[in-house]
Length: 146
Image (cartoon, rainbow, N blue to C red; front, top):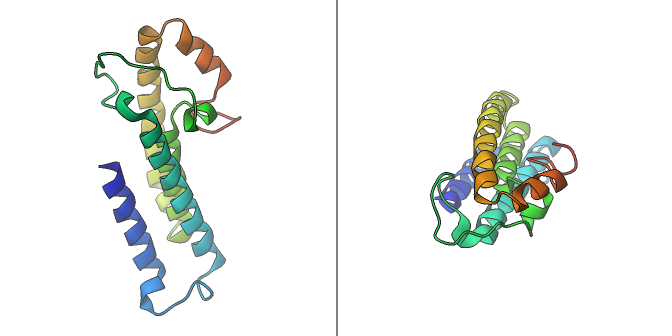
C-alpha cells in the first residue's frame, strides 16, 4: 500500500512540474527542484523505515506473536520514521506546487502526533523496560529536535 502511495504521489508531482511537457530540469524553478528532492527523500525514508521494521509492522494496536523493539536504522534517528518521511514528502509537495499544501501537511502532522502518542502508550505496555529508555534517547518525528 505504501509503495503504491509513493508511486502515485511521485507521478503526480513529476507530471505537475512539467517534466513530461518538454521542459527539462534546467528550466524548472529552483523551488520545484527542491520540492522534488524533499518528496523523493521523504518517500525514500518512509519506505526504508517500512522495509526495516519488517514483520513488526502493522496496525498500531495489532498483537504480534513475538514482536521486537526496532531501534536501529531509521528508528535510530526518530521513533516514527514513516510519519517523518510522509510529512517530509508533503513539505516537498508544498514547496514544488503550492504553499496551500502546507495546510494538508499541518493537519497530517497533528494527526500523526496524536497517532504516535497512542502508539507510544501501547509500546510502553508492550516493552515496559526497553521502550521508556528508547523514548528518552530518541526524538518522535524530527531528529535532534522533536
